[in-house]
Length: 149
Image (cartoon, rainbow, N blue to C red; front, side):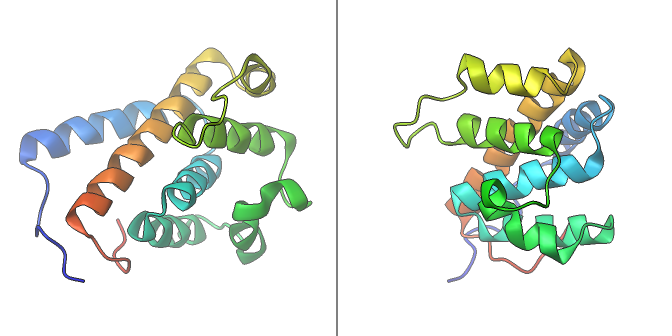
């Protein structure tokens, strides 16, 4: 299936998105944790290009294959820390908004808040939203896996 557009952004959009990413990365969240969040949200949304690029980006930053292969089943593996588990649970709750799930419950939020300060939580939530933004663009334009950023 061919992509519908060669480019979906203008310099203004690119600049705005770069500022959002700068804000996310300035909040003190471990970059590898952000990669896990991105990967899990992209898996849920079925975004092949973001899943592919997220894995490649995480590997460049030193993430292991064992952990990357297990993100989809993070609850059943011993590979993730308690803060990572809280972030992944928050990611799933915030991403599965159309699955009839309860969303981000007080319990899910409290578990994340036990590990992250307000600026970090804000950055994680923004990162989840940005991932969804790109997942939806990629699905709309039929972007294919195989590219990285």
